[in-house]
Each structure stands twice: as structure tokens, then as C-alpha cells.
Length: 637
Image 1 (cartoon, one colour):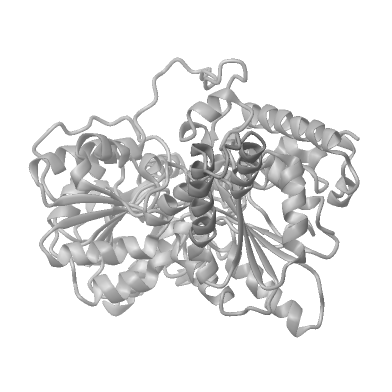
Image 2 (spheres, one colour):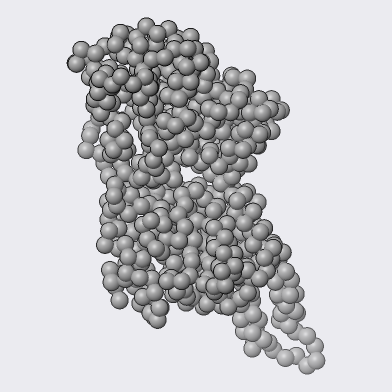
């Protein structure tokens, strides 16, 4: 049977090890060819090919439930669940999603893009199954990196308290998140991984016994060595997996995650056990592609690349691109931290993505990676701020959502100087709705003591870094994924911006454009387009969404009498809402048109495609503004 013939995972049943190995090779080839052409997550899926096939040969996927943690490791799952023919559309608009989605396939039993959720979800399914009197199997596949997240440990704690609830947890141990794992749990797993397997010891002892020379009634030196080994053998069961056993799980492993025969026999045995069971599977991230095995950080995810060399495909443009916001952030923070030992950068397993890898390399004593633990990162920062440090928590917008309570309770209520730097704010593209940074303006703006700012370009980001580090209370800066605008960077002498003060970039008497962050340059383009139709616009770089500069905005709104707000985030509760609230509180009633992301989920697509679908291109915005001139409404949403 060929991979292209598989449309249902139950077709794996009854296949020989040789047949499965052939399919495994075809999965890797298809996976590599697709990611090389379109870009996407590479290393995670390559590492779980045999694990997926071995597990699925022991399950009935018409009944049994499998929950994959995060989902970007589930590309082999997608290839054997009816999506082989469309796999070339991976992460493209209207194509196969980069993560699992319940609406995409009946075999995607739970969708997620954030880590550490699988055990909770699978346990919930198992409890529901028992309450409904059913008997299907529930399996969670979780990586060792995701096991550093508190939610996974909470789920393990709960599952271990339910000895009659059958649940299989497959721990995919490859020593990696995106970057190498940190913390005590990965260190413990490493000890298990390096422990000599019990079966090997038994086989070794049997082999030794065969060759023992019998010397009268005396004990030979060889027998003494066997006695020592027997002591090890009696102690080992109490050590290997002891933590999981104490937590109420039957622990099996570690086993070779690329040995199909061992995987199938182990999974079959695990299904026969009662209560919570953990199978510890050791895999190699990027397995089968030498470049991905050698550099597991870089090849976690890749843009399109050449399969033969492993190198990224060169851009058709010869013009050099401006540096990314992440790069400017990382390099500027290093310069500031060199002068101020109180500054410490904190990441939740995203050193490279946030640009903090530069701080890690140059000032390791001022860098902390907490693992996939955003809640802990925020409260850790609060504790450091209590002692006079200046913590900079660099966390993607979508991931900071996970620490909302800690932001409120541990930082803002105590008015502590924690600086939140929200990378990937706004539309992020192919990762889809779980990763779009849509909500940070709305979910942070409502918290007392919090200050919100966003730079219009990479130079202003540098100024805002100084602003955030010198501010005496909680403050957050959002900035987009991707490259800046190519403006000259500041080499030195950065000064903090006055909190809550905007700037006028262009004057015009017909409409007031108030733009926040990444929408400032589009607003300038909109003003030019409006000018071609005889409509003159004032453009304001708001800089701050909280506090909004009402001292500047209110008089302009009263004079111009037509306001448009622009933001790359949800309009409900966002920057436009802040402006509208401020004008209403000031008694200014003028037409206000809020332009941003409407009340819908933004699916995976190239960013420019999403902007067009949402009506957020400069041409579309200018058309909407021109059309609003014919509307008598006071407020246009």
C-alpha cells in the first residue's frame, strides 16, 4: 500500500513492519517536499512519523480519540487522514491548516495552537466517555517541551487522582521546544532517557551467566559483578519513572520512538492497562533530514528552501530588506542592558523568535528562559520588579493571553514596573486564528495602571524601549511580525517618549486619521489617496492607546468634525473604542469610523491576503472613508 492510497487511518491495520516503514519514508518525502516549497513547520512532524504510525495501528480512529498537543507535530496525522491530495496547500489561504482544526477533519479531535493543552482535553474526553457509559480510548500526545507548561502538570495531577479513568499519555521526548528545553522536568526526563533499559540489563545478565567459569565452591569475580548488577536491577524500578508512578500513572519507557515494532507492541500493551498510563517515547526532532537533525532550532520551521542544500531559497528581489522588528528589539535591548544591570530579558521558550537570543549570547546573566510557562514568566517578572530589577517580558501577543490573571493580579494591582514586549501583534499569516495577535489592545486596555504603546516604525521602537524600561509602572509595547520600514536607526542617545503623547504627521481639514502602531504608514498612504479626490486629511501617530492623547485629539476632532481610527487589532474594545470613549466623555459628538479587524476569526493566509479580505489595504480604507462622507451617521463602526 502506498501513502497516496490511504484515506483513513484504519487502513494501517494489519500492515507489516516493512510496509509501515515504506509508508514512513513516503510521509517524510511528502513532508519535506511540501515544506521546501511552501514553508512551514518541519522538525516536529519529521520526528513523530513512526510514533504516529505505531500508535494508529493500535487504535480504531472511527471511535478512539487522539489529541495532539500544539498540532504542528501532526502533519503525518494529516497525511494519513484523507488530506494527502491537498497537502500541497498547507498553510495557504483556503488550504490545509498548519494546526489541527475540528472543522477540517473528523479525525482532528481537538484543535489547538498553544502548548500544554492535550492532557486536559483528552482527560475531559475520557471523563465524558465514562459518564456516558462508552468504552473508546482517549490518547494525548504531548512533547517534553509542552510538559514544562503548568497546565500540563495540572492535568497530570488531576488524572493521577482518577485511578479508574483510562487515559493514555504519550510523551514525545525530543529534548526540544523550539529551542532546547530548560528546567528541572526536562533534566529529569534526560536522566530517564540515559538510564539503561531494564530489558538490556536482564539480557546482559543472562549472557554473562552462560559464560561463568565454575571454580569449585567459590564465587568467581564474574559472579560478584552479576550480584552488583542485580542490586542495580532491584533499585532501578523504583527510580525509572518514579515521579510519574507517584503521581498515579503507570509509567512505561523510555522506548525508541523510531522502532515501529517496539512502538506497536508497547502501545498495544498500554491499551490493556487500567487507569492513567504514560508511555515515554524518545524521538529525534527532524528525523530523516540531516540538516534538520543537525540544527533543530533553525529547522523547527522554515520558509521555502532547497532540499539538496537545506538553504533558504533566495529572494527574487536584490534590494536588501530592512531589519525585522524582533531583530531591532533584541539588539537595542542588549545595548541598554549593557549599561543597566537591572535590566533582565525574560522569554517563555521563544528566545530566537523574540530576538532575546542576542541577550542570551552576550549577557547570559541578564537573560531568563522559563520554558513554556507564560503565567510563571509574568509573576516571576513581578517578583524581580519588587526587588528593584527592570524585567522585560518578551512574549508573543497570542501567548500573553495565557497570563491575563497574572498581569492583573500580580503586576497591575501592585503597580510594578514590568515591561511587556508583545511581538507578533496583529495579523501573522499562515499560522492562523490561534496565533493572530488580535486582542492585546482590548485585553490590556481595561486594566488599571497599565500603559499601552505601539511604534510606527523600528526607530520609534527603540525610543519606546527606553520609555518602557524607565517607566515606573506596568507598560506594554506591541509591534508586528516581519520587517520594519527601513528608516534610519538610532545609534545612541535615545530619550524616553512622554507618556500618552501623540504626534501630528500631516495636516488637513476634511478628516482626522488617528493611527496606532503598524497602521501609521498605511494611514499616510490613505491620506495621499484621499488627496487625489480632493479630501485633505490630518494624520496623527497616536503612539499610545492608553492613555490616549485627548489634549491633542479633542481639539482636532472639534475643528475637523470627522474622525477615523486605524488599528491592526480587533475593533471591539480596541484603540478606536478608546478614542470614541474619550470623545464622548469630553462631550464631543462627531462621526467616528473605527477601522480594524471586525468580530471574526482571521484564518490562515498570507498577511497581504488577510489584509485584503478584511478591507485593510490603503486603497480599501480610502474607499470606505470616501463612502462614509455620504452617511449621516454620527458613529460608523
